[in-house]
Length: 409
Image (cartoon, rainbow, N blue to C red):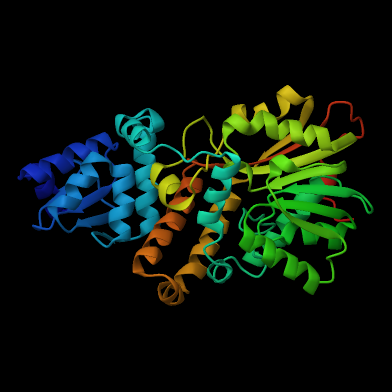
């Protein structure tokens, strides 16, 4: 420890505000950060070497942060009332680790934040509004940092050197092989983003796909893309809620939609999958998740992903257990999502001038914090990424080994 750090520890905070920050640090699990107040006063947890500095510009910002740090920090950073000196990802990682040290969602501050911020509901009307607020902010914005596939879900890296686009294509092959797709089969997709997976399955596996989504911007984009690639006869994009899926299919797939369903709706989602699958039906659900049940970070739910909820595996099971569906395989690829988010953030930071021109500086900072927090959530294990393969209970057409998941023949 340096002499400056020793002096800081021994002196401790002098002002009322400084002492309040010290108590806040204790409540947050003593993360390795140093607060610098508008007066120049510096506060850090005793015996902890700071990895970043947080500059608070005025007293009102500090009081808001003390009342509700889980929401007010993100807002104040977005508005420029808080600045971060150092790596934003490192700050988020140390914050998540501190939260884990004091019990995560069991901490008093997290309970207060959850009470103050009620999650958005995922009714038919609520889901459409939630999706509109996140996905319909402009295809041009997302195209700046998602890569050429426009896949806004976890990629799958077959090697450390794989590019983002290579990893997204590898993910689509990985998902398709897990479902053992065969030429001439039919697939229904619940939530299709900008349409990449449906096109991939049709092009490389010879299946016909009906895909459902309630984001108007994404539906328009996907239909134009299918027509441009000559696959509009094999892929039908439907602007409708997953709850209105009908028909019979060989496979059911959902990649990156379960986070928007809400745990109360899981049995109904499973019932839909069961009703549309034939006797030899099978499927895959790919979703962000948790090691234990707890809400999404309140600021992310409020400002970025309204209505989102990442389930624990125990909650995942409520899709399958009431509906006679058998879980065949579970894979956790969270480090692949950390790497995906790193690639996204690099592309995002290279495009911030364009993002600012399209929106404003507040938006730039808000999404920077969101992407940095996403990286940190996956590197610290705060979030997981589950791929669950399932089948109807009477389906005996099941491989004896996992070799089929990795065979390229």
